[in-house]
Image (cartoon, rainbow over all chains, first blue to last red; front, side, top):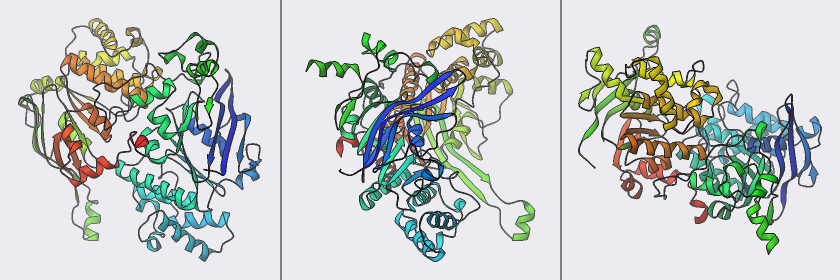
Length: 326
Length: 276
């Protein structure tokens, strides 16, 4: 891992509402290197999709970036205007959405989708674009691409449609692909194929992936590093083997224990009491403390900072203290 | 495994007619077309046991579940619950007595609770409809008790469903199933709409209640890890057929069918993180 493709520094996203300002993302920092898969996990409402949306300038109104920086390579992209971000969207950052049926136009053939996108981004004529579209379909594993290119989305199965959507995201050879729950709508066997495909694309093309999902198994199989999000903050970030195998943050520990595993013989799952607080009622201090069995006085007063080594950081007072002592 | 068969499903078939309209068939000279959603499905569940049906979407597992509770008539085959057939002809009273003992928990807790009813009324309804409670007051009181059983506050009964989170709503759905004094509960993807930490809470609750009330579960799920965790025996469905029925541990250790093997291998598992 060397070249950094994307770095997000102290990102803060706010929503101005009649009931005051809601902080959807608070002090988010991470980076993704070339050819790396960064998994972003968390429960619904943790802010994982919002992070992806912030990078692409797709935050729904009245949300706005209220602080921090987003760098793509050396270029700052969080303050770009409309034309500026449009030159990046699709061209340098591709996006894959959850539901492959709704992200394709039912009235256009798969070839129309691909050639249109290719010609927007690359200086190719119709014939060249079509040839490239066929290559792309081949690469994502659509059998008989020269024939299938003239089919409509409804003629493809769910897994194949998701492959087409991946091909669409790859049209302009982006450096980074943001995949928001790419396999949630798919069956397990198809899901496994998509995971394989993503890993293959990373190694052959050096594309970096930001993989947003709630499925810890998917992360364990696909990602190199993982960021665990909770209530708009990064709770823990590090190598998958460390964060999934030996998590430090009590929330991450609870989350891993809550997942039924094929190897797990325990009759009861570990459960985290309660549910994630809504943004309108975030508790003071660490937002996890009301659900945390190891909460201390300081947790109720002050939010912990994300600290630790470069490749494994955690935001929890339990470890902050150790560091001071050491 | 005890031999007492509480639920017995034998040679259950369901055929859906998906033919084009008559006139189209005549003009286009096409025959009638049928989909076999379930073909000769047979299994039995012992009292107090959890039996799971797994399979990919379209494999027919929900069709079977609907036939087992009687929401969908079977094309052929029989479903017997505690020795009484629900597929045969019955007088109304007998059917009613049987219905009380079978309840269902659905996948989407946002769609399965009436948004215009207070939670206490939702839970009291089966008690009144099936004549378990003698008066409205008694049913309402009992609803409060049931809310306690599923880990909610009895005072929550005054609220409406929209005031609850997904996990809490699924608790309400479970309380409603218990209100009928059900012995056999069919759970169709009970946790697939929930977050993992909430899923763990619901799965643990289902286990606790099973012990407490001696419930029998038929669990429908596409999530093999959930199924592995919850059930003692598992049936694997593929294209409407039950391809393998096996005790849970044995199935995962040594699947006999290649399809089952493929399904198990495809599951993204968190232990992969330490293996890689």
